[in-house]
Length: 232
Image 1 (cartoon, rainbow, N blue to C red):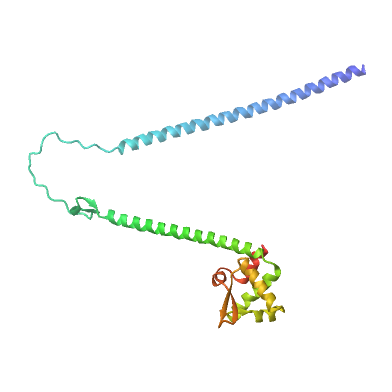
Image 2 (cartoon, helix red, strand yellow; image 1 turned 120 degrees about the vertical axis):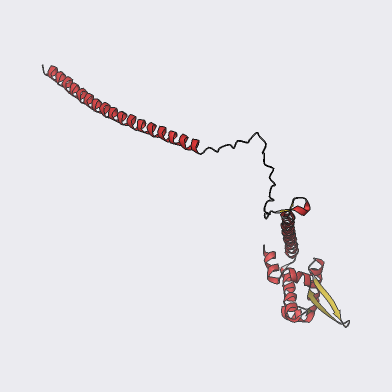
């Protein structure tokens, strides 16, 4: 008996839940119906407005249509002389057969612009070539100075500094600066020249030999630049 009661209770609960779901569905259907009615009213209003707008537009278009002038098929009975038109400021030269007077100036300005553009392109190309040549020169300097030893670099740097300070260097000054014999300085200078380092030798009064760094190298790269290129 107890189990039968529980079963009836469960059935009663299920029926109650079903009733609740039905009432919820009825409410949702009613809400949906009212919303659909509202949407239909809105659509009707919009359609009426569009019809009125189209009617007004057609009326405006019909009133603003250009009237086509009707030409008379009968010749005029009055032989009137036409008065000459007032001269207007036209950009056409009557002396040149109706050729536009501004065309020549336009061509001149176009040529002037084209010449400017060509000159700018030439200058850009020249600058690019110069930069490329400078890059190649820097690479060559780097390769050459990579080949020399530290001692040879020290001799070269001292010659460069003395050349900047005093206008030249000689074997005696170098030997004092570097605490080396003059013969060893001669050997180092000879090695530098053989390796393509631009050290110039000049004899004065057939006795004293002075040493200089090539002016072209000094224009291209300073001593600090050369040391930086060698360190790369």
